Length: 148
Ligand code: DQA
Image (tube, rainbow, N blue to C red; front, side, top):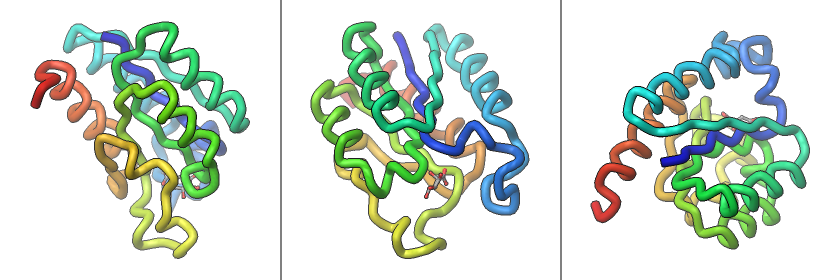
């Protein structure tokens, strides 16, 4: 099956950006590991990063046309602001897992609310780059046993 990893604004700076919060792993490191793991399990993995809300919305729409089965999404700050991205996920109805490197609930209160969480299969936050790997594990399990 096709899995998409969607990365929102500022995640292109991962590794250099506030490393005490987000860690030293780069986005390329994370994407490479996810792709290897997905391939080993017999799936395809694509990734897309953008700092622009409309491009993320467009990529979610495209996922319906290219028959993406599951999306892992770290929407960055758009998590807390974007009704448009929420509406895009609702429109395509593709199951997704919300991912954050940092523990949102140990941070500023404006990060405690997400426009995506109630639509997501689940949310993983607080484990740095491992948040993505844990989310992929959950995705792979779902793809193997869709009814579970
Ligand atoms: C983030 C948390 C968001 O609040 C923040 O705006 C980000 C990254 C995370 O992965 O911890 O850009 O999504």
